[in-house]
Figure 1 (cartoon, helix red, strand yellow):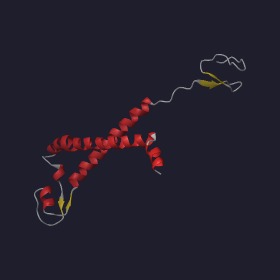
Figure 2 (tube, one colour):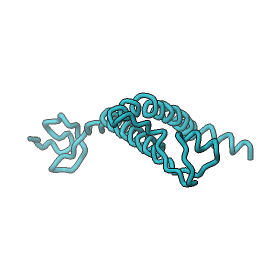
Figure 3 (cartoon, one colour):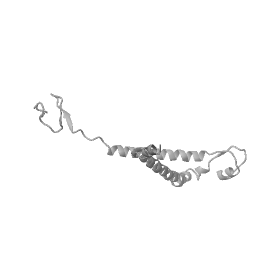
Figure 4 (tube, one colour):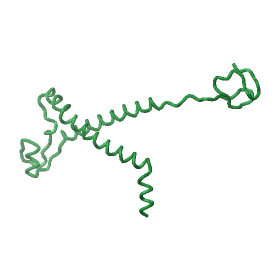
Length: 140
């Protein structure tokens, strides 16, 4: 059983998938930091000094100045500001993956075919052929 597991885990696609997951998790942290530390502060300032990470609806009925104070008191809150940050994280990651897939697919264009079929005998001949080597027909 251990031998089968070792053979499974050492297959190329499993290792590639593991590397992709690790890099994806690191990329997600980078994007989260970008959204929380770079993108949201200027956006909040443009919208009237709003701190998105501190936007919440208090469900407990008491007043709290900040989300941290409400959480410290154990109050039930609806954290819609953090939800907005998470949506922006997702959109940025999705857009970056879209651009990456688009770039990779651009480099992986299908190779031009090396042969074509003779219209007279239907035999495969080189693309540059002017005359079929099998039936000796002239090709246009």
